[in-house]
Amino acid sequence: FFRWISTKIHFSFQAFEDLSKLMIKAKEMVELSKSIANKIKDKQGDITEDETIRFKSYLLSMGIANPVTRETYGSGTQYHMQLAKQLAGILQVPLEERGGIMSLTEVYCLVNRARGMELLSPEDLVNACKMLEALKLPLRLRVFDSGVMVIELQSHKEEEMVASALETVSEKGSLTSEEFAKLVGMSVLLAKERLLLAEKMGHLCRDDSVEGLRFYPNLFMTQS
Amino acid sequence: MAMSFEWPWQYRFPPFFTLQPNVDTRQKQLAAWCSLVLSFCRLHKQSSMTVMEAQESPLFNNVKLQRSKGHLFLLPDSSLKYLWRKAEGRQQTEGKLPVESIQIVLEELRKKGNLEWLDKSKSSFLIMWRRPEEWGKLIYQWVSRSGQNNSVFTLYELTNGEDTEDEEFHGLDEATLLRALQALQQEHKAEIITVSDGRGVKFF
Image (cartoon, rainbow over all chains, first blue to last red; front, side, top):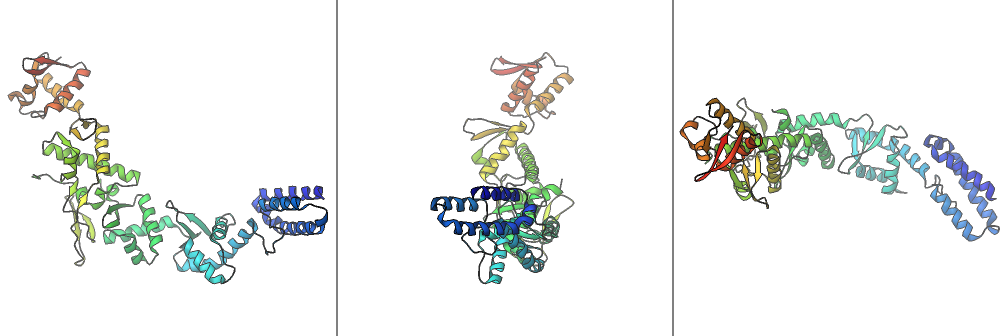
């Protein structure tokens, strides 16, 4: 029995080495975990409880479903991959409607509201989003310097939006994040990230006073 | 005592009073501050200052800084003006460089050779709009030009004598003068000596 198991486990390690291979082997992995689960049930009399527990935790650490649960896709990487593909489908239109970019919290609310039941945990959402780019889906996860996480359409170029942000700020002389958000029709969180990116790129500079944080065109660079 | 001092355009630009996080922007900002400090001290003939004085001085405080919204224009004469499309609320607020940032400006000046701390606790400093080496060079040029190598001068003669009235170093404060002469001494072009009632210098 254990020799049979060890060959199967060796097989599963190979699967995890290469993500793309895993895609192919994914179905087989699910089948494997199911068959192991059944074998454990059948062999209940031949294996000690201690060995069974050790074995189950071993499987869990490899990301294979706990043989005793009945989730359709399991709780490992494969689940997140499926979820990532689902998200790509759900988020395409909302992203387009919001100028190609949404904060992860907005995504979380949107997706869970749509689901109604079997709500996603924030962890699962993040893990699924981390796979978007690897799976070559038309959206990606981006983390700004501040730690704020967003989902962007692949076609969205935040750096190009910076140029138009500079124009808007120049027109008005100076703007706070709130003022900019209102003008452009963005959330304040994303507005601030855009202004910060513009500052990082050297197009804007800041005025930080008791009255708040304002952004100005970076005259330090443009005037000699 | 602002007299005819012309503030640079940055002085009316609110971001000037916030230390910029972007490294390249900060470099330009600090360069502008250093330049402003030196020209301010030059005009006001201020050769030394305490940090407290600096904090209170108009140098680091623009009490008339405007933060109002409006299109920013840089006029041909390099003055900065706000023009409003409509009468939006005019806010006259203060532009005040925080003391930590003042310290950073002072440190920049020290690195460039224009500033020297006068005490260990860094509460007062000597500010030299020309570096000692530059003054030394000017003085030595004058000495050579007027064929006075191998002459001896008192410090007073150099800075307050009739002969030097037309020279830039005329009226130079003693602390800076001494450092200029020390620089020349290093190059073996001069030697600081003691004369009857103080110090003097011999040029070679």
